[in-house]
Amino acid sequence: MSVLLFELSLTFYFAAAIVGIVELFKGTKKTSNFVLVFAVAGFVLHSATIVVRYTVSGHLPITSLHEASSFFAWCIVVIFFFLEYRYRIDLLGPFTMPIVFVLMLSSSILPREIKPLSPVLQSYWLGIHTFLAFLGDAAFATAFGIGIMYLIQEHHLKSKRLGGLFDRLPNLQILDEINYRLITLGFPLLTLAIITGALWAESAWGSYWRWDPKEVWSLITWFIYALVLHARLTAGWRGRKAAILSIVGFLSVIFTFFGVNLLLKGLHAFV
Image (cartoon, rainbow, N blue to C red; front, side, top):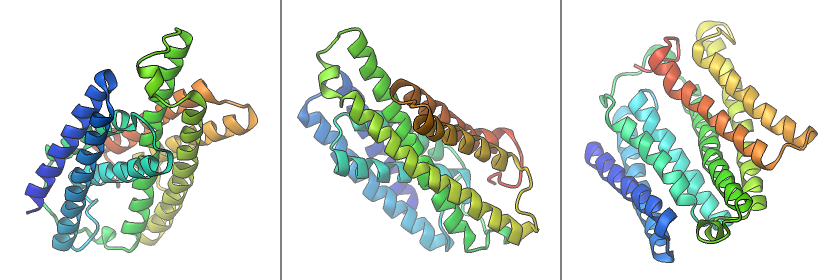
């Protein structure tokens, strides 16, 4: 059942991503509505997939790279819906749903078997620590999409191409504000994830910090976003600089998520 639900959700996310890309070039209100409808359908099926897998395994399904990629995508869709509700942003779907689809596609090609939890994972910290981390990363992923939107809109403005896509994208001030809001959401979540991870490590291994590759790269990511906020508040780094830093920060998130797990072995490696 969970396999069928997953494949159906992947299909709807694919449809949302494709229609979103079409919307960038030949967008209408109708195509925008289709993106949202496909995203909602994919999300409902995706949520059902997670519930079924939770029922079977007895724990939050985030203990393999397949599950983690899927749950990461789910959290991004949650943030996407929140922004749609809060800001009614035109063309947010084309800059968000492709990220969701790529994560789901990555998840689909990874091993899907459910394995028993190792003793160290049999802790209440599992759900707390990982949910905070994934939700924070989802906010950063959406900020990445907003940052790209900002750079495209700025390019249109500087080249005086004021029709077409320029008219349909939000203005630079709104994009900069949303980018900032997302980072101020993601940063404390990442901070709490690191703190709860340290508390979990102390209870499991007797040490708060072991310089594991995932810990190191999480700290690097934390410093990047701390720099974004510090530079904005003290040096007035807004607009283009903030957009670029949010893109760089998300690249660090992706390496922490995929690169560390696939290239570097450590205590946090998925099995």
